Image 1 (spheres, rainbow, N blue to C red):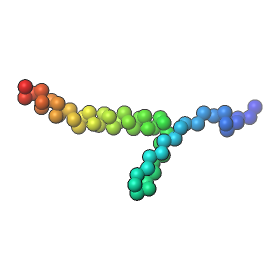
Image 2 (image 1 turned 90 degrees about the horizontal axis):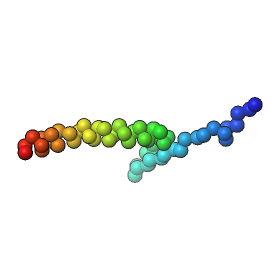
Image 3 (image 1 turned 60 degrees about the vertical axis):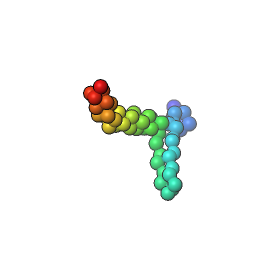
Image 4 (image 1 turned 60 degrees about the horizontal axis):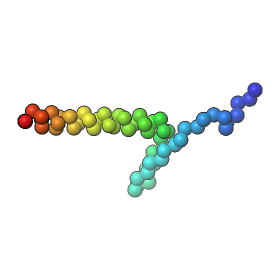
Amino acid sequence: MTKDKDSKSKDDVIICTDETGMQLYLSEKAANRLSWILTGVLVLISMPVFILAFMSI
């Protein structure tokens, strides 16, 4: 039996570009992981604001 290249499932590639022409190629799995990491960082950065707001009540 031979393995056909078409039989392998290929990941979708997400391409991000900016105005300077810099390009970032990410698989769908990598983009999903990156979005969760950035969401966690955003929550950690904004957490002190919410804590101070509730402490002042």
